[in-house]
Length: 308
Image (cartoon, rainbow, N blue to C red):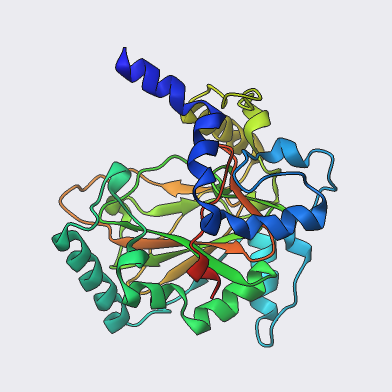
């Protein structure tokens, strides 16, 4: 009975709005963009793709300026939706990341949880934060994104996520669409039996599949009632009919994979559980976008210091 009430309460948009009411500093980033495009919203209000139905369809892909020396990388990224940077981080860099993660876990400040995820380790480590704000990396991300890339979150994995194929845009959404970019860092050599990351080149050119595409819009008061499995099933069908080819990323320690907001990707099953599959993911929002979470219809909470 208590659990049923809790689940019902979590579906209420009002519950999130009340929580967000006390998060002004982390939500104020959207207000200038609401004003610029003429969207009548409070900083704490629910938001989803339905709010932009009457607005011009826009995509970040056509915006921004290509920085010197990155023309070929930008063209490849725009065509394929991903970019691989071989051994971008040195062995000492990677050893430092692993040591910081071990220290955070040992301290009890954070732990690996659902799908082997350790969330927001960057908030506990200046070293990890500096990895995410590496200037050589940011130079590339800003050019590919077409705007300044603002570090939003980090996720560390000790084993494979085994997550079904998806697009990040259902989780971390923007207006204009495409205002997100992600990196995946190999923290060790990763083979076929460790559950490598997979992706579908060119899938970023497909439509952005959002709540309305699997009838999960909900009502004025409540979130949609369809589970995430319904979204995964829809994406499975889209891939089957697209003719796109799956690529498994056999990464070496220090390699970085960058992907577009709408690139289909996921994690293979890890057949050898005796091995680890250490990796680190970071997501970046474009500075000049409305940032929110389509699936939960919540504005994105972003630490003000991320913009500095």
